Length: 380
Image 1 (cartoon, rainbow, N blue to C red):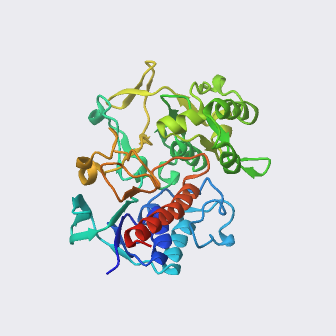
Image 2: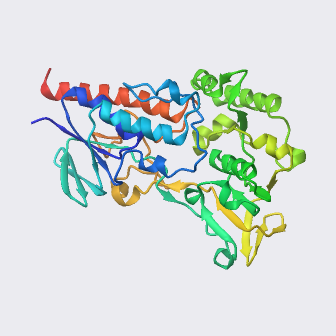
Image 3: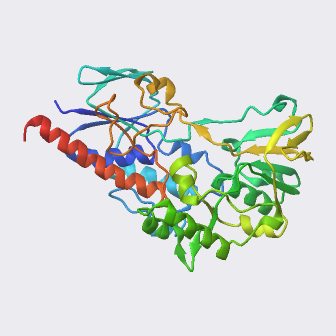
């Protein structure tokens, strides 16, 4: 009987792992709690396009169709995941929720809503974005306007003619603020705590991702000044518009805080035209008002919180000691935690080279590592 690999999560990371492991003669079981491939991607906002190129975002063993263009839109990437599963003969066990993972002899036992599963290897591939996180702002419950997490946002058309505050300086917050302007919001404020690093999505026709691939092996001491220089030349100084320059190096933020630079798809122009107004971070809510850290009081009709997610791994793996204080795995790729042999984590790194490209590379390396482990076990 072949060894069993249990893959938790049927998104891009889980699909890539399954595709690269199947040729090794292993029994691969992909456990997906949703009812379809690409479920999380289906629920993203309407205007979403990948910020990495089509060629730089493909998973192992199948290119993304050229008809999808350079910057692949949400629905096309969902279709690609469906085609990828079919191409590699990956049958997801949908509707399967993993509730806990425990050591069992030399392997693992997974408790699921459909019964126990024994596995030799476990690959955790559920990603960062599982439980929406809303800060515990004082007075939040008193707010008379609409307060939603970005996961609930679909289109700026819903907010046409309204005053909206977007909270959060990641790529999601930047894109939602831009979408709101383009869809006719009456006023858009963009609330930030830490000034972000903003870069163009492409330089002279070359995707910023390509430069990220080249710069990634270098030290932050080298890359941070390069990124700052690119920002000064191609983005400019936004201080007079209310957004100071970033005080933390762009690559340092990636490595230490898991925060990627914003790749501009229209936000900078909207700020310079006064259509998006950067404002201080939220201090509290007070009825119909939002009170900012600098004392300013604004009265938006809606607040959209692009304030991140939690991994939801604590209940499943927290007892194993493999997660940090934020519930993020402390190892990734081919690395194994000493407390969890034959358990791997795929899709938990943020990289200048692009997360999908990173997933593809790590999936191949992971398959090679498991293949070598299997050969050693068999004594060949």
